[in-house]
Image (tube, rainbow, N blue to C red; front, side, top):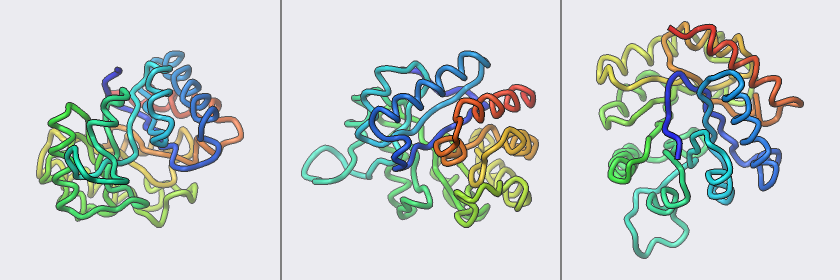
Length: 230
């Protein structure tokens, strides 16, 4: 089970058909291939049904897309942290704009994940939200204005002040929490811009998952990740 190193490109597979079943495994292997070829950190967040197979087949870090704030027991339809850990994931996304949860649930999920040795990447839509959620001490926070997700318009270009604002407020609460940049990331230049704004990587989805040539896109991103290492 690979642990997470920074800076990182974290690819969220969402529920795209291009990243479902065998296609998910193929994409995960492409991510692994680029990570090895370019000596960079790339992680993936597949759908729940694909987690076990992908975690067994690739050496890069694998994340769940969500967990629920429950303990083992009578919780039909919920996602148990112990269950996702058992299949080999290293962490989980939380509070993505497409899977919002309450602040209290974020708090509980962060605690439950830490109890089980899993990394938490908590998503937030504004610097103010970042500041509020940083109090719960997640391992990472991803700033993602929802209006830019999936648009191909990177927040680093459209709203750079949102990214720098997030980095600053999180640093004020806990300087040990790295910030990732999400929303609209689709090119190597977007990755470069995100790092120059003070983040430690990117969280993206359609820019890679729905690309005609995912490997080509990832290689470009990886080269820009390397080119901006401190």
